[in-house]
Length: 468
Image 1 (cartoon, rainbow, N blue to C red):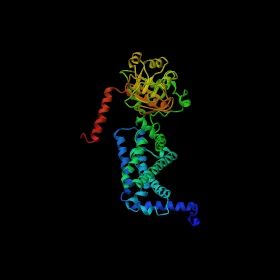
Image 2: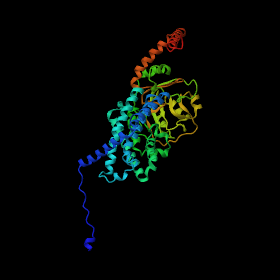
Image 3: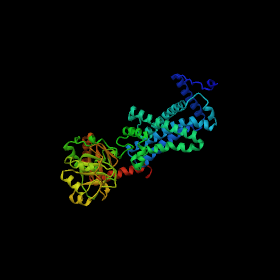
Image 4: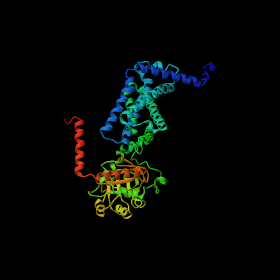
């Protein structure tokens, strides 16, 4: 009797072949395709909503007059959100179709595991996500001139992989919540995708989020996939733009940089920013928020000596004044605009050592001293609060100042009219064109200009129907 009461030993099931795994995964993928074809919202999910998102966001960038880099930043986020949403829907449908049809119990009786359900439905989502990406890329290129393919096949493949892997994780999370809590969790589950992409910096730099939220964002893999693709599609403008993530200390300070020839620097010193702006692209003109801190400040022109400081810190700018060469313009991407990165003594030392001036995407203090000394300062504004000197930071790395990407050695020209940055490789060509235009304009009298101007305006009014 005791022998009969003993449990029989369990025999392990034989390991199934890859062929069986493939067939079961494919079967569930095919099942999702059949169900999706019966879903009235299938066409809307695949074409209408992504298309509307791309058009509306693209038109918004036009309305706000965003430059090419910022437009690329927004449109990349739009594509990522649509691709993630469409793909994760298919993963979620693995459970939701059975919940809605009240056939969930039959699903657990089939010889298909969770992995087959998730991967099979995910593969369908990947195909649909690629279709959505292709549609949005065509719209973005045709309507807004943004070339998604231009980032390179490797960067594009990595970006889409990141989106689709994120979709798989979110879709499995949605399925888990629905199985555990039923349809009551369905709405909350759908909100998960928007919450995750919000944390990843979908339409804005992660650095604008509160510090504690940035810690969570750093744990979301999609943040890094977005950054990697944006660095290719919109160089110098990633989700972590203006963050405290800096180069390792041993590589943070660079002293050897290329500089334009002396005759090119001298040539630009004789040109107003208005003359240069007629020649160069809008993306090379800093936004008006960076302005001279007092009237009639004068003009400065010289090679960019770039600095990036951390939040509430000015260590690297204070180090830069001893390392910049005479004639350099120190251009600063400050970590914030609440604490001053420089004061009267720092500006006086920079002037003493021959620095042409400061251009700061941040704030400065002791303005009266610098004005009295005649040291040119262009910045967002002023603040009496001094920043700390703890770091981290960078010297002579690419930065973003006033909405413009600035590389060490680029020509910087600033005056009362604005600030322009001429890429080093284009400085000679731009100088020749700007000088030629300035010389031609100087030969035209006011009377001749008025006659030509009125003729053009009247012709334009007639052409547009304002005049008979």
